[in-house]
Length: 125
Image (cartoon, rainbow, N blue to C red; front, side, top):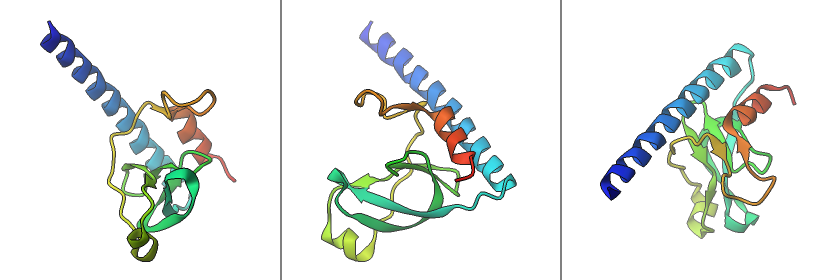
């Protein structure tokens, strides 16, 4: 019974991730078509104090700049522990599976559907 439940949960997560990846791929294509230039991406230290350079360029999806889509079509969570090494040398975030809801489980008003965040990023600033 528990194995069955776990298998269904894994299948659901995989389906959600695949749907989110299709949204992200479509977003990158539309951003390029519209001439929306990717910006240099920075990683924020936990607690919001300080940020670190990365070799990545892309489009931020949240106002607090903690999530982005790279020009490589990958989804990135842009937070990391505070680090002197990262402060001096920068850091390279690892791509994550994109969620259908950014900030799910966070405080009220801090979560946003991925499709809404992607559409916002396509609007001129």
